[in-house]
Each structure stands twice: as C-alpha cells, then as structure tokens.
Length: 276
Image (cartoon, rainbow, N blue to C red):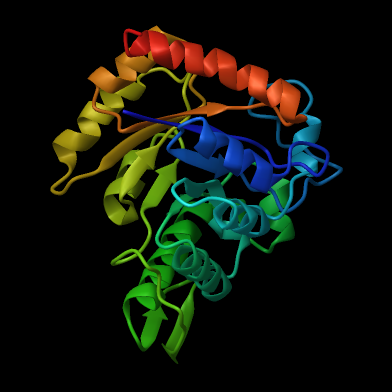
C-alpha cells in the first residue's frame, strides 16, 4: 500500500512547491490538495467536524494553481485533488485544466472529485444543492468526452455542448484516474457509474465492509484509497489487508517545522506497519 499526504495549501503555510518537494524527498507516493473557492460568511450548513469551521477553509490557494506548483517542483510525486468540487466548476474549463496539468506533469495527476457539503458555497456558483449529485455525474461524463475525443459532444440535463475541439489531451490514457470522494449512502453507485476508484474519508463506520461490497458489485477493477488516516500502524494494516492501494494522512496548514514534525509521526507509524 502506498502512502500519501494531504494539506490545505494556505497562503501563510508551507508553499505548495516546497510541500511537494518535501513529500517526494521523504518517499511518499502522492500529495493531495482540497478545494474551496470561498467560504460564505453567513453559513448555515454545519461544519463536517462540528463546531466552528477551521480558518484554513477560507484561506486556500486555487486548487489548480497549487497543483501546478507542486508538479513543477517534482519529478515522481503523484499530485491530485482531494477533492475537486466539480459542481462549482465549468466542465469545459476544468477539463482543460486537468488535461494541461496531466500533460505537463508527464501523467502524474490524480483527479479526486466530489459534490461537497457546503450548500451555501455551491449555491453561490448557481448549483442547486438538491441536484448536485446529478450535476456531478454529468460534468464528469462531459469531461471524459473532451479528454477522449478529438471532437467532443455531450447532451445532458445540466451540461450540453456540440462538436468542440480541446487540446492538449491528458498524458494518461484514457484520462487521469477519477477518484470519487464521499461516504454518503449513494457513493458506491457513483463510483460504479463514473469512477475509477473510491476515495472515502477515514473515521466513518463501515468503510471496510463497503469496500468489500463495492468490489463484489464491480464488473471491472476499482481502486480503493482512503483520506485522513491517523499516524497509527494498526489503522494502516487494516486498510492494507482490506486491499486499499493508498492511505493519505492530513498535515497541518503550518510552516515547515510543524509539517516536518507531523511527517515524522506519520512515518514512524509507516515504519511500524512495515515491521521496521
């Protein structure tokens, strides 16, 4: 099982390029950045973790700017979105950004996607929260058409365009892995419908059982990876035994020193997991 890290890339924390170099130098396979275009000041949707929403949510760099800095500073590290809020993005523009990053990085982009949780945020982008899952599916499907066809068209309820040209195409064929985030009741259906893998959050009941269900239902290989694992060898072992290919640990949005100390703790758990 590969190990990766994730961080909210805030303007007052370690820079995305420096974070990427550090992750690669220390032997991690991947680095993921989340996305929030903004945080509405008058929020009504509760924070996923309860209590006040952490400051970092409103202070992140643009996702694809951070990803570009990270891939430019590294040569082996896989860099991805964890996750990209596709329902807040134009699919034609996003398809271009994904393809451009994947092409320039030599095929190192991982495309984590999701519908998000902050209803006021998505509404500010013109997305009806009640329709967000259908919007997510159509936008991902439309992007796949753009990546895999010289002349692309798509006709859906929420996305529609005829005969467009868009280059470059991604370096990875047919396209970068589409990793469907989320732990909700319908997430396995979404993975099977348009995903290459499932990317749930740790600390939710039943993930291992649901992973087994996903594989039993799938008629093709489906990747399994988990976001937000603690620095705990037993947790890593449980995911490895369940067939997960990647475990990703959150790092603090802080200066280099606290980030390196957090990496030390995570890497100690990884060493214990490997019996070192």
